[in-house]
Picture (tube, one colour):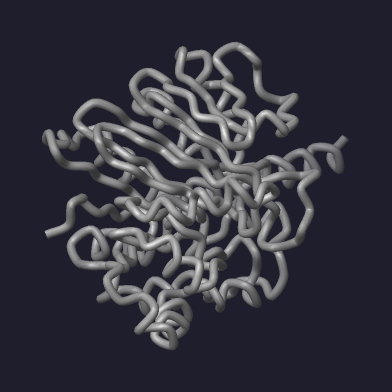
Length: 323
């Protein structure tokens, strides 16, 4: 009997410790989050990098890592802060504001509409959930867990929001009501927002059976292109059409794209996304820092002339047109 009681006490203590480790926010994370909110991303990029890379596993972290890791905790702080800004920001006519979320996640807000693309919670996180009350449309580029969150999308559908993805995707976990499926190359007007999807592979792997999509969004006179993790198009005529457009206001472009891709798309502003991707472990993380991306872009400086490149830490935003 005494042994059982001792075992029960030990289990209870472990549960309490696990709960404390989950809710505890390191003071360093709070301080860094506050500093970023009061400064600019380029000034604090190295400090943010050092904080995220500390004790980061070499390979893809195990699931339990997200329960207590400081990487998740500062990410949650940054996302919650960004969502509050989305909620409280009144965007004037003739303006557009874009927030950078985790990986390829982005939220676009104009005076009339709010659009969320590839917003997904980390394991054991609910930081993105408040978006379901703010965004009118949720768009998904592909089914990787850092881009697609079935629980979040179902919550959005319960709020009568629209969810958009390629017809080829198999999303059995998402309720069908309110879901809009687009064929590759198809455009659809959704509550005043025109969305077009183009089927691609995943980072040039040539696999179109598990497709990704480039998404073009036209809202309130602005034209944006979000590339997800895609690189090569399944339909080359669609690819030629997209590259011939040449009037994108903002490219929400994956840093894995070659600078020549950015050059040929010729957007007015390129917002590099999939930065600081600690979810993939230390080895791939090092390729996704500001420093790594800037060094690569400098090699192609002449090719990127005329394109404004704006680097944002997760949770930061830009106002377009830029001043």
